[in-house]
Image (cartoon, rainbow, N blue to C red; front, side, top):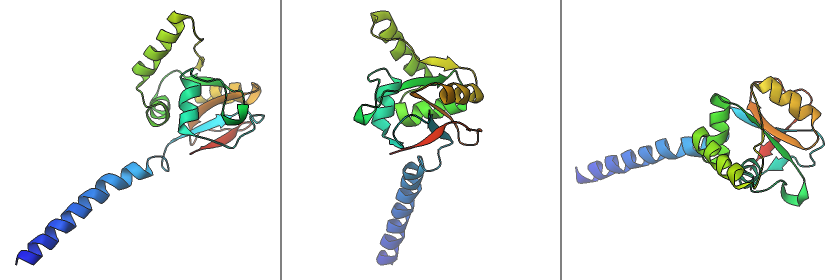
Length: 148
């Protein structure tokens, strides 16, 4: 009876671990947000660290010296998911960080647009522009960057 109890306990622990780990590991794979860039941006992949640095004002270039200009969505679920997945902050925390940069005179807040269509339009016509949209949003004229 003891062996059956131990086996049952082990099975519950394994189930619990899989229940917690699988969603965490799959977050990026099922993300509903994609990173887009102007077709002249000479990379096909970016790292989460590069995105964080570019979108928080810590850097204006990707690895290899590729200069980029970030553009933001003003608000909404796609914006919140991008900030959570790639920046690691809430919208409030993200904007507070930018306010500190602005007040210290060390940078200029990225352009902020009202809709995914406006982000696509801006990115498609602005050399070096990089932004994000929902996975299902039309994205003609831009390229989707993979995130590692």
